[in-house]
Length: 227
Image 1: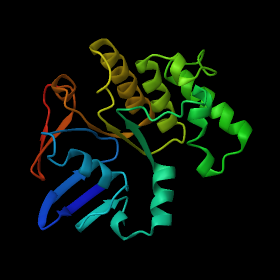
Image 2: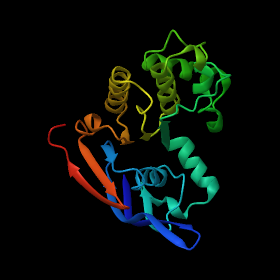
Image 3: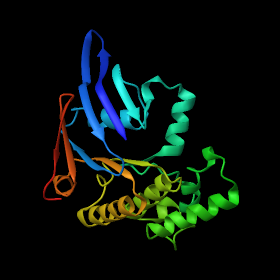
């Protein structure tokens, strides 16, 4: 479970200070699916960075399973990210010279998984997202939707507890968007993940069980009865 308590993130630009997050309180239970929306510059990506242990708050607590991430050393934060949190981004972030299978394997290297097991788990993860026949293909040999499936497999191969997605359908057309969302929602259900996603897409937001709206660093959350 996540507990954010009075989280503030302040950036200083010259003489000006900007609060990207301004006293945010938020609870996210294990297994939740939460979508975050808001205007550009409103604090969405900053909030996701806090949840992903990619940045520290200026003030407040970001607690994951009883541990305040803001108080951990960089070494322990890296361990938390490697073991517990999977990330999917808009730009895929695949290594162009590696095959789909090799890209997925990269998530297991920091965990000390042996090569044979890495190959097996990567193949299994790619099969689970419908790419079992594309293991040896480079990113340039795949469509945008297929590349995002590789990125999802890479995020999930380490069996994380949390999946964070930052505009994962932002570079895709409508049909590919729906395919990727079907994959993400299926993985959420099958694996019992806590799934948190930032999106500008209102069609996606309407289907989420919980919707958080963030504007000028302040957040409001509502249950989505239509989901």
